Image (cartoon, rainbow, N blue to C red; front, side, top):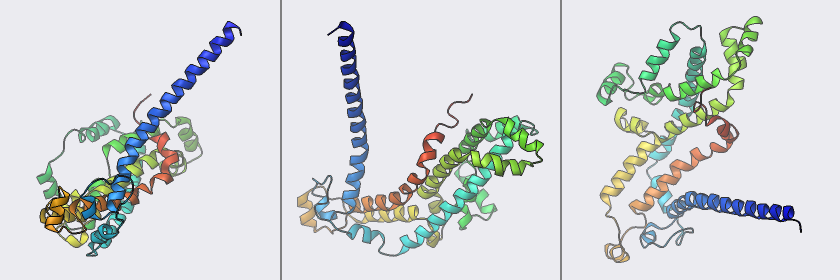
Length: 303
C-alpha cells in the first residue's frame, strides 16, 4: 500500500470520527430539549397524588385525564379559547397588513422625511410611556374592557417592521421600476410584486406575532375587568394562582398520605395547563417551517 493511500485512509477515518462526534453532540442536544418536554406531557396525564411520590420520567405510572378535566371543569376555558383564537387570527392578519404596508412605504427612498420617520419609529424601541400613562391612554381611546385592547396596541412592532423593511430592500429595484413603466401604482406593486416575493418574512413575522398573541396574559389581567372576555392564558394564570394558594405543596409520600391529598395537585395542574396552552400553537409550525429557516435571519445582516 502506497503512502498516498495510507494518508487517504487516515483522513477518511478522521472524517468519520468527526462526524460521529458531531452526531453525538446533536443527539445530546436534542435529548436535552425533548426529554423535559416529554416529562411535562407525562406528568400532565399522570395522577397528581402519585406524581408527588416522584420517579416518573417518560411514561405515566397512573394514567388519568383528571388534570385535563380540572382545567376544563368550569367551562370558562372553552370561552377563553374562543377569545384567544379570535385575537390571534385577527391580530396577526391586521398586524401583517399594517407592518408590510409600513415597511413598503419606508423602503421608498423618495418618501419625504424617510430618515426622520425611521428615527422616530426606532426611538420607541428605547423608551416606553410606562404602565400608568399607557392605561390612561387606553381608557381615553375606549379600549378598556373591549376586545380591541388585545389587537390595536400590538398592530405594529418596530422590530418586525424593520425586519420587513430590510427584506423589501433586498428585492431588486429593477422589478419595481419595471412595474412603474408598465403603469402599476404603488399599491399594485405592493400586492403583485412585494407580497408574493415576501413569503419568508411574512411567515416569520406572522408566526412571532401569533405566538405573542397566544401567550399574552398581561392585557387580559390589567386591561380587562370583565372576566368573561379573558383570553385562555389569563384564565389559566388565575386558575393556577388559586390552585397554588388553596393547596399545600406535597413534598413527601408521608405528607401526601397523611393529608389525604387529592388526585389533582397544583403541580399536575401546572403541567396540564402547559400542555393545553402549548400544543395548539405548536401545530402551526409545520405549515411555516419551509419559510422559517429562510426568514429567521432577516435583518441580522444588512448589506
